[in-house]
Image (cartoon, rainbow, N blue to C red; front, top):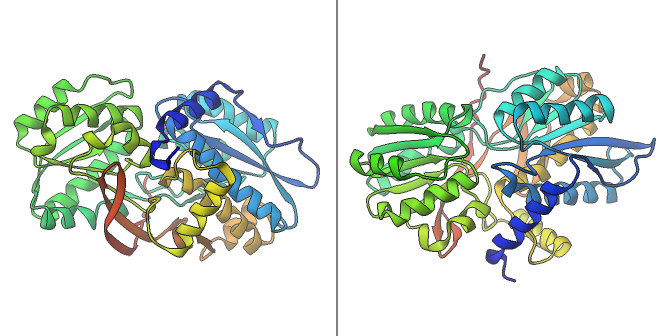
Length: 389
């Protein structure tokens, strides 16, 4: 099976994972190990991302354990599902934290769950949050490595407006804080670049009919659409967008359209579709190429495709190792004191923690024949990690 033909395999794997118990330990835990709780979306709207997240986490754990572990101790992973409602995810987190007594948690899930978890942990254990998010998280003991709107949009929107001659933007996303906060930031970047927002729409995760939204986009005269829909909703919308012929009217820019979602959309429905991210499987760098080689050697050519969300879990484990080594401890207080300036080598390049976030290169990619091809690179873009709330 070719790597671009992974969708059926990936979705089958996601279903198998989703049907498994909420908690899966890599093996029986020993006294001389570090317990790492990993909360990823094994079900729900973002369940599509779960298999690649689990694989990338396991690859990082295996590589670190082979090199001697964290502070001389082997990592033992306990996976928990964060794909349900915030209340369901919180129950799983309580079991990790109070029941399993994990030493640290890595999370790849939505922002509502992140808020519930920061309230639970209260800075008492290290918590590394890995995915794309809306920015502004500064809770004690929380370290964020995902892209923010300042990174994904501030350089990209002006580039598209200049190079693709667009100016009228329609904003559509799911109805929760990440899309809404992202679009608030986008409005500022659009205005600063001389454009205008001609419409805004928010849909439930369960949305499967997009006719009304598509009619509004057509009537608005938009020549660019910013898409902040998640998983299945994004797939359904983008397919319908193409069937309406709107790709001839407007380009699309997604900030959560990665390789899994693109495969679901299909090459035939991806005309004038762009994505902004800190990682794509096809970025050309020695670090990314070596990572891809190791991943497919370990999991096979038909493994769930590499993507930004899966790769972020790999980085989360690397960051935990770097923080522990810097602090010479896994205690939350020791890590907090030593965290600023902590660096690690990632498939994305060298990453350094600044105010609990990381600056990074951002890639603008266009969908071509079912894969993403990078068309522009923006170097070392700031996360603009100002605390909110």
